[in-house]
Image 1 (cartoon, rainbow over the protein chains, first blue to last red):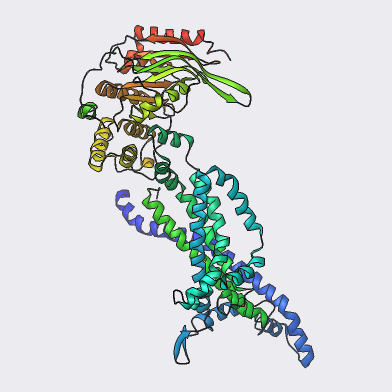
Image 2 (image 1 turned 90 degrees about the vertical axis):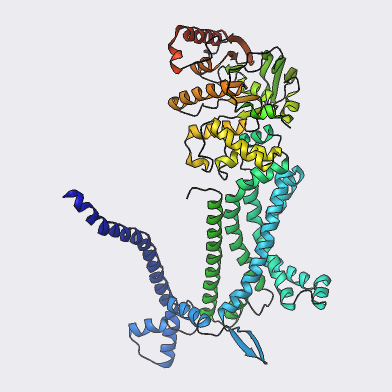
Length: 332
Length: 279
C-alpha cells in the first residue's frame, strides 16, 4: 500500500513545497513594500496637511478629517507627493505620452515623455561608463605592473574622488564644449551637434565611474596566491603570459563587482552633469525644471525613473556576470 | 625541443633505472640566508647532497629545517647565498629554461576557470607546444594518473585526491626528468594519501623520473624513497642521509616488515640527533 501511495502523494506535496518556497521569497518583500507605502502615506498626510488647513481657513470651509486627509493626499504641488501620485505621473509620462512628436514638419523626441529624458541620460551614462571602466582597467594594470605607477597613481585617484563633482562639473562642461578640436569636428561633420552635447556629460560620468574599477581591479589582479605565481615561474612564463593566463581571469569576479558600483556612479555623474549646465533634456534637466516650478510630483517621478534605470543597469550587469562566470566553470 | 625518446618516455613501462654516475642534482656547501628585520635567518647552511638519475629522494624534518627552501632552491625559486647548486650540470635557472623539472605544491593550485584538461595544457601553452602535441600529451598524462575521462570536468567537481593527481599530471605534461614535490599529499586524509603513495610509486617505476619529495611523515618517506634526507632546523642542515634498500616492488603492508621499521627507526634517530623533538 505504501509503495502505491508514494507517487500519489508526490504531486500535491511538491506543489505545496513550491508554493511554500515562492511565498517564502515573496512574502517578506511584500511586507517591506507595504510598510514603506504606509509610512510614506502617513508622512505625506502629515507634511501636506498644513496647506490644506490653511486653504480651508482662508475659504471658510468646513471639512471632515477624512476630507482633509483625502485633500492632503491629492494636492497639485504637495510638499511630499503620495505614492499613487508619483506612480500615476510615472505612468502618464511614459505610457500616456507619445515617444515621438511632429514639430516643424520633423519627427522628434517628445520632451513630455520621461522615457525620452531617460534616454538622454542613459546614452552619456553608458558612454561615460565605457570610458571609465576602460580607464579603470588600464590604470589597474599599470599599478600592478609598474612600481612607479603603484606609488603615484592611487593617491591621485583617491584625491580625485574627494573633489565635489558638483563643483567641477560646470568647469568641465564649459572647457570641453569650447575645445577647438570638438568645434572643428562638428563643423566638418565628423560628429553631430547632439554628440558634442553628450561628450562633456560622458566625461563627468566617467570621472565618477573609473574609481571603483581601479580599486576592484587592483585587488583582482593581485588576487593570485604566491603559489600560483611560483608555479608560473617554474614554467618560465613571461609577465605577459602570467597576466593573460592567470591575473586577468582571476580578476573577473572582482571586475564585475566593481562594474556594478561603477555603473550606478556613472548614472549619478550624468545626472549631476545635467544640473548646473542648463541641460534641456535628461533626468537631471527634469529634476531641475521640476524644482524651478515647484513640481514636486515631477521631481519624484524623475527620481524614481533614475532609480529604475540604475536598478535595470545593475540587473543587466548581474546577468552578464552570471553568464560569464558560468562559462568560466563557476559552480552553478 | 624534446626528442621522441623523451616524449615517449613516460608511456613506456619498464624497471626504474639504477642511479648513474653523473648526478642529476648536486649541492656543494650550499647556504641560503634570508635577511629579515630581526636579523639574518640561516635557512640552509653547508648543505652537501648528490642525487642520481632515477632516485626517489625524500626530505624530512620539522618545520623550519629548510627542506622546502632546498627544494625551492633546486627549482630556482630561491637563490643560494653561498656554495654551488647544479641541476643536470647546469645552474637551476638554466635547468628551468630547459624544462628540467615539474613542481607540485601542497595545494593542487588548479585554475578554477579551466577544465582539468585545460589546466594540464596550461604549461604546454606557455612553453609553446602546438595544439596537436598539447592534445596528445594531455591525454597521455591523464591516463598516467588514472584520470582519463575526467579531462572535461572543472576542478571543483573532483575530490581533493583527484585534484592533486591532476596537478601531478600537469607537472608531468612537459615531460621533465625531475619531479619536485613539496608535501603534495599533506592536505589529504591518510586513506587517500596511502592510495596516492602507491600510485606515485607505480608512476615513478613507469616513468623513471628523478623525484624529490618533501614530507613531514616518517612512514611516507620510508615507504616511497630510495634515499631519505633527514634535516634539522636553526640553521637548516642535513643531519643524515639514509639509503633504503627496500625492494622496488612495495605493497602497502611492507610497512609492517622489520626492514621497514628499522629504516623508520634510523630516521627517527636522525631527527632526534638534530634536536628535532626539542622545542
